[in-house]
Length: 337
Image (cartoon, rainbow, N blue to C red; front, side):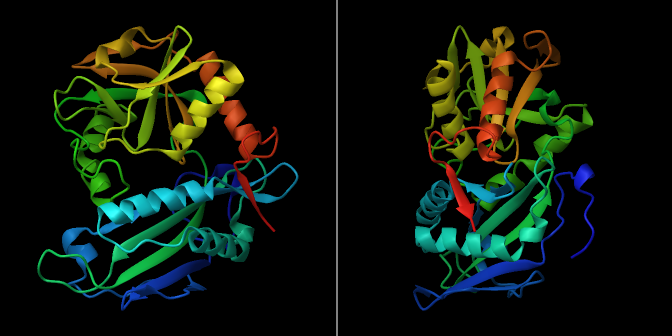
């Protein structure tokens, strides 16, 4: 195993030694297997390369306080992957096969799970059309691959907070498109808006709806939340917003542990300017405070310009459960022996 500086992990590719590969041919998934991390072979005519028939998931494994290894809600990721498979005309995976394949690979790569409190092992399952096709049609063959990498915070400042620019020139997804699944093409389209925002000194883009550019949708690749008057609001799911697993967990924690009233609703962009607290969530982002939002060149500081107290409590509770520091009240953890 190569040497890893656990004290200075970023969100970068630092691949673990092993990966998992399974193939779907003649209408059936094989049992797959664990192999050395490395290159794969595809024909130039593979459907993923020509028509983007592919999706992925993002997950993590954690080293808990008592030095066990756990995953967080893996069956939820399996269900979401299969939702995406149906949308993109790809063969679904058995949920138990999905989870057990990941568990087996984590066991093989256990030395790459960072020490307690030093980071996480990021898990990337991908499923795509590997078969050849010239016309626009679903592939006849598919590959399912899992690779892993130890990571630190997604945003360099971690919980210190981020500054957003409301994007008015581009939309992330249309209402009846593929925004509700983790299709690979969704993320390719987000690269330029993000690059432009970063050139202007912002950490990320805040997207508005494609219908009237009025209502908040997502923060780059993370779900958005607003706190005001004891209500925790997040954009309602309607086909263009990804149903994040962390999003659902935060809604449950907010109501159960902090007596916030959770709401999925349409949120006008100008509501942000008077919010008490804003944050975004995701497997990579965890819970990240939003310190300011800029719209058409005018910055709006959120609260006192520092991470909010309720945001901090939600973060501490969620991370505490993931790391085995606090009771797993919802039975979210799956331990890997």
